[in-house]
Length: 104
Image (cartoon, rainbow, N blue to C red; front, side, top):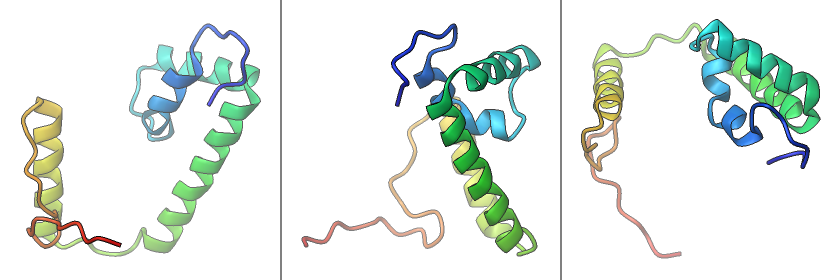
């Protein structure tokens, strides 16, 4: 998605790192660049607003649910593998089964 206008920070970069921005997981200088981009680019601002609303809805509806510790461990292990650049096994995190493709 792009508004077609040139920006200091490209729309694709903003959208690729949108959740890092929403989760406050990026350096302040990058946050500043994103905020400037949102002021200039209404399509990206709209996407930001939509993702922010979804995040709030999920937190409100599911924020108090307890996550089983074994599921949390599996998910965190997979995140660690991805971050380290290692191959990630092709199995479902919840069931441990390899997903099968079914013809439609």
